Image 1 (cartoon, helix red, strand yellow):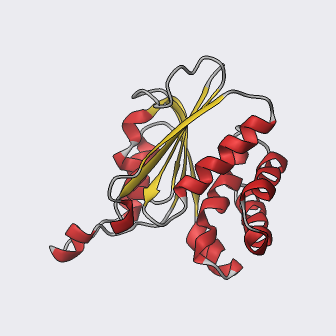
Image 2 (cartoon, rainbow, N blue to C red):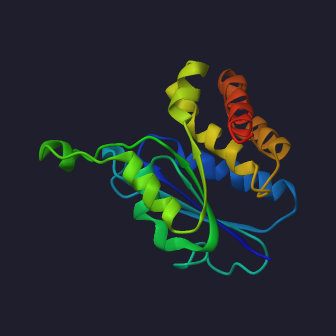
Length: 192
C-alpha cells in the first residue's frame, strides 16, 4: 500500500527539511520512497510543496489530485490552496497560523485563519489543528514549526516518533538536534 503525503507552506518554513526527514524515516523502515519539491518563488515567500510517496505502488514522485492521504500544512492558507490533493477521508495536519501574501498586504486585504480552518473542517476530512507558532515560541525558536508538525503527523501512524527522531540524527547538524527533537516531542504532545 502506498501512502501519499503532501507537505505545503511558504519559503523559509522548513518544508523541504520536513520532507527529507519524513523520507529518511520511511527509508529506515525499508520502504520505497519517491519525493519531489516544487519550490518556485520560495526565496520570496512563495508557495512550496513537497510530495512524498511511500510504498511500492508509487511510480511517480508527484501525487495525483485526490490521492494524498495526509496534507501537512505549515499554514492554513496553503492547506486550502492544496486541498484538491486530499483524498476523501484524508487527514490534514495544519498549523493555525496564516501567512499574509504580499499581494494581499499591499492591497490592504487580510486572510482570516479561522475561516480557512472552518472551511477545512467542513470538508469532512480529519483535521488536526496545531498551534505550532505558540509551541515554537515556547521552545525559543520560530524554526521549529516543521518538526512540531511532523511530530503531530506521527500520531496518524505514518511514521513513528522514534523513526522521526532517528532520521533527525542523520540529517540535522548537531547544534540544532536537541531543539528539533524537543519540537517533535511537543508536536506529539499537542495531539493528546
